[in-house]
Length: 199
Image (cartoon, rainbow, N blue to C red; front, side, top):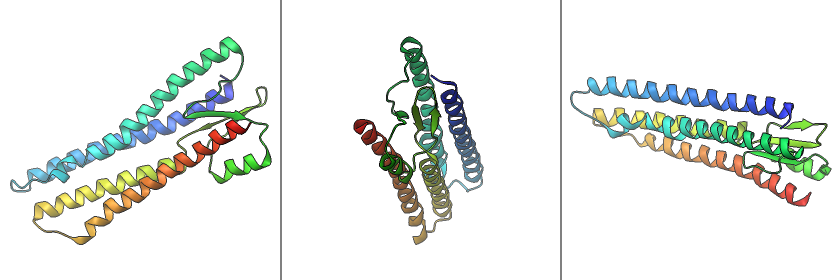
């Protein structure tokens, strides 16, 4: 593993760790808010209000910490392989390594696919990219926020004993944002794999 790779991966994992901490804080705030709200709801309870904390916890913090742990595991493997062979590691799911002598068409494919976090090491002639990128993460966490707010709003309406047609906007918006996040992960990954096969 090269020094520039280490710096880039360290910065990337710090971003993921910070986002995971924000999700943990959001889960805690939702749990406290839900608990206090249920205490003053005159024995009326809503599963949406009670379970709202689980959305940022299970869809945000757990996957983000899992990716950080996975990257650390892969980083150790890459360092071991590089020390043994003095060659860059070949391909990883999150830390993809592709040849830097790519054609202009391949570079255009990379930029149009929104490949994030480029790292170049002049000695090795290899570039690395971290996935999921910024667009993917922003869309995913926005979907989590929409779903969480929708659950809290629906819980409030259920406790008051009323309904509103507009609460359907939240799950639809969350699903759309999460589909954008999935596309923002799959398209760059597919582009990198295609380039790796062609080179």
